[in-house]
Picture 1 (cartoon, rainbow, N blue to C red):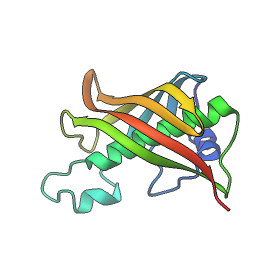
Picture 2: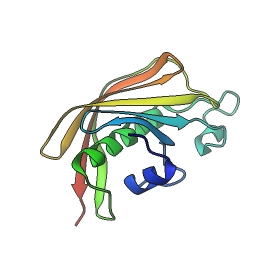
Picture 3: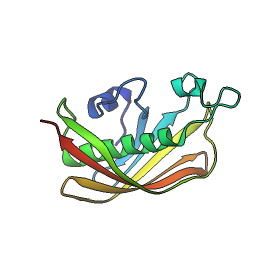
Length: 147
C-alpha cells in the first residue's frame, strides 16, 4: 500500500512545520512501513542548525521515524487519530547517527513493528539516504486517549 500526502494528513495529527512524512512508499499491515521525507532547505530548523552548514537535527530524524511508525500502528489497528488520541515516544534505544543529513537529501524512513502490547509498540527503525544508512534506533511508542 502507498499513501500520498492527502492520505497521510488523515492518518497523522501533525501539521506544518512538524509533519515529517511526505509519502508512504510501502506498507505491510502490522509489519513494516517505508516512507519518504524530502529534506528541504526551507525547513525552519535550518536557520539555526547550522547557518553556515545546514544539518538536519538528529531529534528531527527520530521524529520522522516515529511518525512513520505511527502511520503503521494506526493502519494496523484500523483507527485514525482524533482530537483525543495522541501517539507519544515512550523510549528511544541505541540511537546512532551515521552521517549528517542535509537539504536536498531524500530520507527514506523504515520501521518494523516488533511487538505491540497493552498500548505500547516497539519498533526497529532506520533511515537511509540513497544506499547509506544515516540513523537507526529502537523506538518505543504509546498511543493514549486524552480525557
